[in-house]
Amino acid sequence: MNAPPQDLAPHRTRDGSFTLRSEQLGEQYHSLHGALNESLHVFIRNGFDQVVKDPVDILEVGLGTGLNALLTWCHADRAQRVVRYTALEPHPLSAASINALDHARIVGEPDRNADFLRMIMSPADAVQDMSPWFRFMWTQHCLEELDLHEAFDLVYYDAFSPRVQPELWTEEAFRRVRALLRPGGALVTYCAKGSVRRAMLAAGLEVQRLQGPPGKREMFRAIKPCLTGG
Image (tube, rainbow, N blue to C red):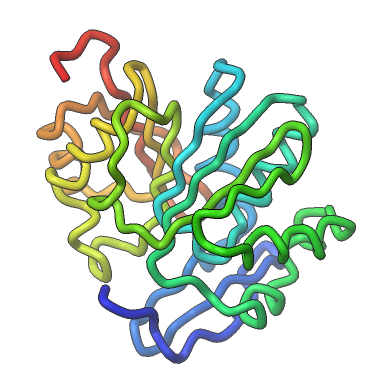
């Protein structure tokens, strides 16, 4: 996808939380079955909660509306675990679009709203210390432009679907993720297509099929083996 859709509009999902939907693309930033429930199930319960390291370095591929970042910040504070969070977003959203979703109130943290908006609208590549436990930075770099090696313990893979962003669901893309992960590190994603699983396996990742969020039968968690040649 070379540019963000121009017709994004707030859309209420089945759990009462909001996402942005493009009728032009026939795509939205979160599951219509429940934006909040999807993020909690895929990225928090099957991602963040499964990592025992402290501090933990997280990479998000597809910052989008910032819901995953907000939830991780809240959970890091509650657990008093240090999180260093880096998000990739080549096409950042406007403050008006993000504000319209009312994420802080929806997740039960209305007092964080002003700080959340400040965090998401911060300049690219500027580190934001949001609490003693949560450090945030986003960048407009694409995945292939990220010049790091074994820098992350966990990757939230939240790109648009393979139909919309096929280039991010290839063996080449997952080889790049494998290089970014530390041994034993994991990628979690809402996607459970057979072609994606095959690409992950070809890239040298070990793929686990897990119960999916509401509306989906399965999701994937992919692990970088601890014993690896590079």
